[in-house]
Length: 106
Image 1: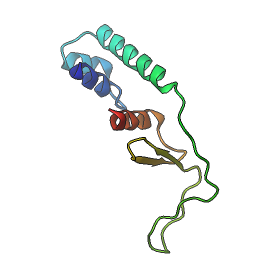
Image 2: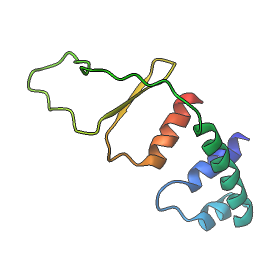
Image 3: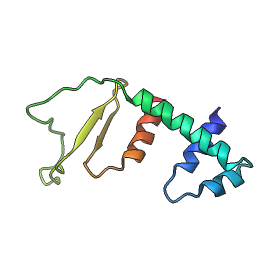
Image 4: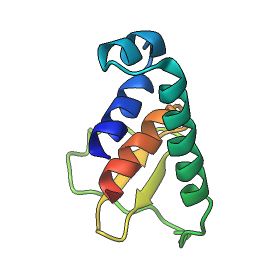
């Protein structure tokens, strides 16, 4: 199962040829497409859940130098139950963010 996930993850990387990935691992492209569909369908059903959201009137200030660069607009902080926090801006690639969050949950 881990090998299957690793192959699918490899096929989801940017600028990757599915045919090349399938050939590299000795599987057919049809099988790789099926695995991708299964995994992406499972991830979308898992992603369709509610999460606790807290609105803060004043953003937390981190200790640091006064000359630190200002926070970019559109900054989103995702605090996972494990205590890990992920901060991204509005320009984040959604596929990359999903992979990071899946790895942190995993």
